[in-house]
Image (cartoon, rainbow, N blue to C red):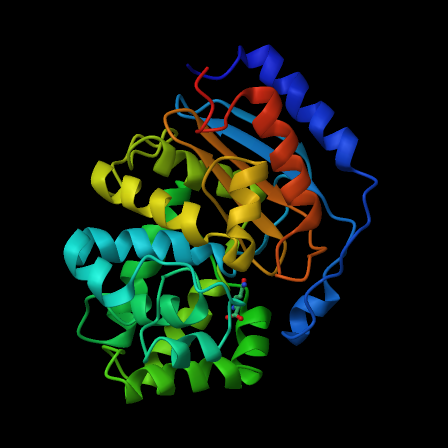
Length: 313
Ligand code: GLN
């Protein structure tokens, strides 16, 4: 099946926004100093379907740093370059059951990063981007994420500087991976690229377009560009289903029933294969670092739009 008619979707997205608007649960991320200054009440919802139709409500065009949601799209870029088997072995596809920046997860698995959606696996994935220099790798990365969004994505320099100065844990993770022979680039360079990718500015609308590209077999439904292959899109969605919301991925799948990805600045994307994607922005987070209102909005919209991939009809 597809989505309901355009008018109906528009009304349902508005209704979802109104329903969740007054929820003030959770708190903004504070471990990256510049994220602590986020306006907590900001709230935007966007739905983009695989025909390119868009429905935007509230702060759907407000820009924020993409943070961990970049992991999904950098993974797709690297998977497209190195192939299913190589990336499956090198980075892994299993949930850690631990927080996104866990060092213990690496130790428990003899240095294996486990999956590309936690920091260890994401830094190891970024380290696999082809290119002779850091700048060449960065150009590829920024071009790929921009192609997913269908527009040029810029960096939030303040967030990049702030995270670069408070990034000891990610630097430790990269060095630990290197010690196990599990990092394919210089650790300082890999962490810097990873920090830059997390600082790219997107809106909830952009996230919905990026997600709809994965929902549409790698074709951006607005620009028409084939950004990654259909196989890579399927692989990326499988990885998101298992680990997109870290140690809460099981609860997410149980409640929402589609692959998704969150980030600590409050962004969230939920992807319905063959149908479209929901993008939300709301900076208040739960204990795992996932947007509270974003999850509630996605749960509601998944129900009323009939998105759950486990439903037989
Ligand atoms: N840049 C953040 C970090 O590495 C991203 C984390 C996240 O969004 N969960 O800690």
